[in-house]
Each structure stands twice: as structure tokens, then as C-alpha cells.
Amino acid sequence: MAPPNTDAIIQEIEKLNLQSIAREKGHYVVFPETKYPDLELFEHKDPGHRADPTKASILKHAEKVFDLTPNIGTEIHGLQLSALTDTQKDDLALLVAERGVVFFRDQDIDVYQGIEFIKHYGPPHIHNTFGHPEGLPEVHVVYFDTNTFKNYKSIGGVDFSLLVTGADGWHSDVTYENQPAGLTLLKIDTLPPTGGDTLWSSGYSAYDRLSPAFREFLEGLEAVHTGQQQVDEALRANHVLRRTVWTATHPVIRTHPVTGWKALFVQPGFTRSIVGLSKRESDLILKHLFEHIAGGVDFQVRFKWQENSVAVWDNRTTTHNAIFDYLQIGKRHGWRVTPQAEAPYFDPKSKSRKQDLEEKAAAAQA
Image: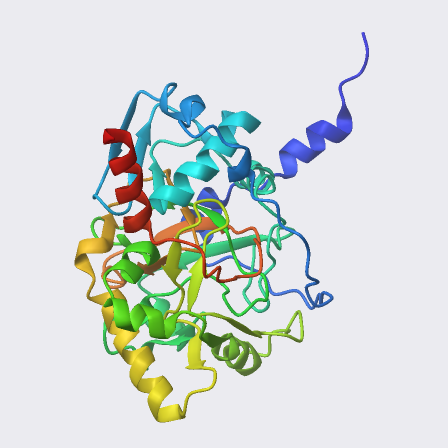
């Protein structure tokens, strides 16, 4: 009889179980001295372009599919992300592009499968400053517990002593990159007794809710996004900066490459100024837009996690906000993998979500 594949056995034994490590050891990330070349521009081909408009491979094979709100958020039961075919991954890309965020419960996908899964949607992003699990630089760890306030002044560039309101936490991931995040996967596997929900906001509807004159004013403007706060935090902690670029300029109104819909693309996490305006003008407009996002309860969805739930969302057309209401009572852990997508752009011929859906509905009744 042939001997077993020793390399495969060793690889399986050495795989990390992040859930077990978090529960047994607490905060476990490492900060190697490894540096990387600055990210180069590449042509991104969104798999949503290959999708069946009916998304049949997903919707017809699920046990249950339902929208959580009219404007954002869909939940799917009966599918395992670890077992999706390429066709299903394409259809999922279109569904996420349309609905902003899609949720799955009772998922068996592990971090290694998660990395491979996300490669279907783009090259995995390695964060410029954050720690990661040993040997897994593509993985962003979500871990907060009752010692967070005591042990850390700030996490991810957010100074807890200056955090006045939870509205300050709205962000889209790594928008300071020239080609920031696209479709993104987060699995939460450890939860406090209560709390720890996450909010998502629709950039499509945020755009639609602005007045026509204000929308017209914003279209064509660009804003500066920076990760300087994260860099400052890393330098204070004597952690390595992996790359030398952490600032980018993007359109204030962005067009999604698959849906063709316009979305508001600013957020308090990383957007700092609007190009061509005075500081006073820029600050006033951004303050209004940030408050518009935070106060837009009619285009937000709040997800109550269960252990081993997964959220798959589009960072191009949503913002999200983790709620830190549990830091006195328990711990919350999960992991995220984040692919890069195209460089943000604005197509003046693109439509709003509302306009496009209304036109399609009228055409169907004609």
C-alpha cells in the first residue's frame, strides 16, 4: 500500500483554527517586519459581468431567501459558501452588487477556504499596518474583549478616548488605496452574550436621498481618502509600515461597474477633504454627508450575528459600522478577507438605482 501523503497531512495539522485560538488565547495577531512593494494598478474584471441576471444558481438552490429591508440586505439559508461553484460565485457577485450585503448563517467555511473563495473576486488585500494570524497576512482579524479599553488606546486608527458617538465608526474598507476593496467576506465565530451587531448603509440610496441640485453639484467632484490615522497608530506601537502609499483620490459619486448605478462614496473613516474646495467648504459638505449616512435609517440594515454567520458585502457601494456595545461584558471574534477591485470612477451616463429600477418596472408594464 502506498504511504500517505505526508506533506498533505502536515499541512492539515498545521492549519490554524482561529476560533479556538481566540477563545483560548485572546488577542493573537502577529506583526512581522515584512514589507511589500507598493500596490500596482491592474485591470479588474468583475465576475458579476458573467452572472445570470436571474441569479438562478443561487436563488433556486437556496432553502430560503428574503430581503431584510427594501433598500439593502438579503439573507440566504441552505447554501454553504465553501461549496459554491464558480457559476454560483458569479451570481453571488451580482446579487451582492444589487443588494449591498448578503448574509449567510451556520457557515462551515474556514479561513483558508475564505482566502481561496475571495480570490474569485480579486487579489486579496494585505493591510498596510494591521496585525494578522501567523502566516496569513491576507487575513484581517476582528477581536475585541473586556480588556480592549485597558490594553489599547486605539484600534485601527480609532482613538477610543475621542470616540464621542458610534456614528464616527462608519467606513468602507481601505478606501485610501488606489484600487480599494470590492466584494468582501467576514465571518464572526465568537460573540458576547448580547450586542455586537453591525450596520450597513446603502450608498445607492444615500445618493438617491440627496436633492437633485446637490447630486448634480457632487457629481464629478473628487475626495481625498487617507489611512494616516492607522499609520500614526502603527508608528506609536513600533509596528512596521508595509508600504509607502496610504492616500488616494476618488470620485465623491461612484459608478458600480456591474449595476451601472451611482453611489455616494465618502465616509468618516477615511475621507478627509474634497478637492478644489476651501477647507471650510469641504468640511461643511463632508459633515453634512457623514450625518446623512449616519442618520439614514431608511437605507440601513442592522444584522444580529449568530456564531458562524457570514456577511458578504460590496465595499464599493456600502459603508458599515460595528457597534461596540459589548466591551464590558464579553468578547467578539471573527476574520475578514478583502479583495481589491477596480479604481473608483464616475460615469456621467450612469443612472441612480431608483431611476433604473423605475424605468425597468415601467418597461415591464408597457
